[in-house]
Length: 317
Image 1: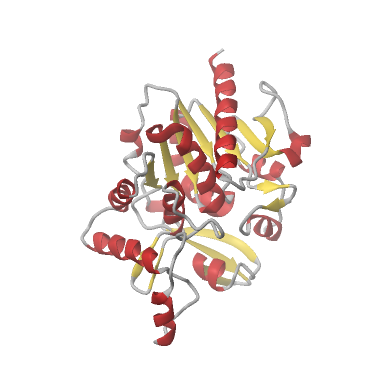
Image 2: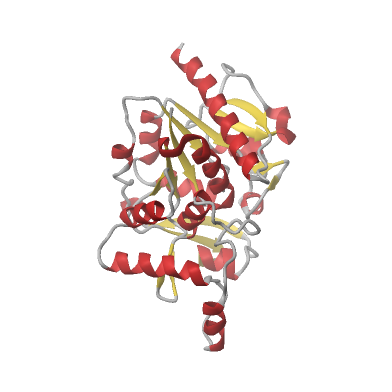
């Protein structure tokens, strides 16, 4: 089985890592890059870095982002010099940002740079930015338009969100390497990881042509809910859903992916909304989706793949 995973953020990275443990080079992870921004002269790709560090097994286990056993002398000196400290960059993390920024200035693509970094860190799976073009997430809060990292990190998600905007999305092109990485003559399963649907997955799907391409090439598409019993495991998904007038629930996330997915995975705490394979709409199964350990990630990935295989059998009948 070839698997294409869509991911962003800590939850998405965790499931992608579980899939990578099982699939190795048969996994391609498409990552949201609408969170990218420039800070202190560096090009920062938060979701790409979180996925990369997690698949490499070097992510900070306490936060889910950044590097384990990081040091912070760079930030201490920035503070001493009166610079901005609201977005923390660890000492070893800065090395990646510096290399990426330099290569981008020398006209290398983000895809090529990501591939170089992945190989250097021993990652077997392929990690692809959703696009090599510039797309930036902004949120409208109380009539003010905030760049995503200003909202997410500097203001700690406190402002009330009324709208999410992806600037540059209209002219962005899907990553051209998608068609070369996948063998379109073999079955392809797409798994939408438990990332924020509105901030991490929607930018990927909004790249012109991406959603239709996924439907065309995927034999089965399965999504995993990031909402468990009305709350997000991590991040502002539930808060934003409430603020834009949506009930924060797994059922709402399932409806959000309507017309795209064949199957939907909810946590066992939301078992009441499950349906069987062959019922109208996507089949819905309940699994243990909270990933507290490496074993949890791999087990959830294994169960998601088994669910996808059952759906594939149904599709082929």
